[in-house]
Image (cartoon, rainbow, N blue to C red; front, side, top):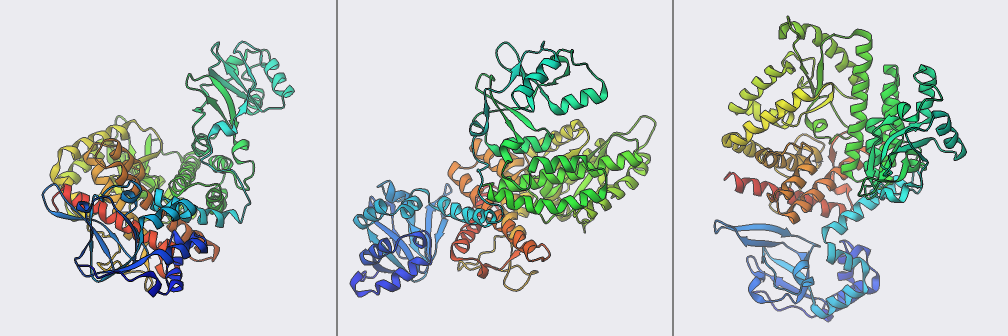
Length: 636
């Protein structure tokens, strides 16, 4: 049984306030509110295995903070076994949802080792909840509110270098130019250009009778038309316009628009309503008027570079862009997609320049695997690529390889010049084993799935996240559909994948300390292999088993939640935890660049502030929970 609580007047109130200041959300609260907590709380002791809270006790009446020790949450699983669903360590609070909902807790809370808790009565809690905004926000949103604090600090650090700006989460409706200049398709080009000149705009939208956009004509189109003599000024604009302009709904955000512009190299976007009628136009200038580095402009500059040396010099702009995007409110999931988009543009341009110089004369698709295949690359990246080719009539696969492999070797080396380091494991297109026809790739995957060797399981983290960067995609789409069906039907392969996925454990000890990486500097954690990999590999197994074709980890989790495989709250917690680790990893990379240090994925948790350490620990614990779900599903 727990010992009798000690009355607050017998405690050192200043010491309690000092303790609270070291932990969120108390670190953001006013002194008066901390004093209120310290004056009204009592210190309770629980011996090892004591029950702290139970669903049988009725509605929760206290708010508690662990001062020393550990609280373990227990529930009875479907098989009747007791499962640990969470752990609460020093500085953490419980139970939030039950207290706010004025209901019993659904989880039994048990002390693990000798444990002391600061306990606040319901009345004192209500007073604090009503008077302190940081405390109220934390109680209502839990770890999400703490994640916001981490993101805001990362954002404010980046903001210092470029000044204030709009958020990339801002709906397009806020950016859109209202009442854009429009015309019908039969208007002569001369009159359309005159209308653009009168209104001092760079584009005109061509609409049908229902005001739905059917085309766009820009000053760039005018220059091209004149230079190529493809039309005259008396030609109807409908014959000179760019058909089917890109459009997004008004509630889409600025990030989605920016990525669309960067990927397709255009400068204007139509904003439409639910009936697909035109309500406005957004330009890249509208989105990034305050930026010193422009995402769309950088992607376009990469896509039009005429020399390798230009591409090499442009790579230094990507790190600056990451700072800019962080300051604009982009989260880690958005940042890695931005980096991947620019990496894709660089790879495509290297390929295009080499085809101009020495075209191998064979249609091929350039494949990318691993983190780039998942669109999850950061500034620290190496090459994982391959080739899927069509075998021309009259040629053998080996004859095709004789033409493609020298070309691929040049591309691999030039990508290395651009900052994509050569893969130490030779997972590159210049490797004959990764330059294959559709049939050869299909045969390779059949052997890969049927023979679950240790090496094949290692390969699973690379080749099961595959994407086309350059060339036709139809053959790859056919291949991936077949691969997905085979995996869905092969329960043994799924179980082997699951077993492999849980071998890489999150770096937490049984005493809630950190388990350091064996190959890094002393007392460091590897955020990629120890932190992100458990999420990536677990989500991959669940997604493949459910026939989900997406390769991005966050998108996989979202699809699994939509299918009911993941509980929605669990999926949100896992997505937040994954994003937090990725954010800390990117921040470490930015610090390394700032200090002119080589990029790596190692951090020393002692260098983090208490909030970051706490959330990092919570993120690793969420990875443990995801792995436990995988172990339960496959009886590992």
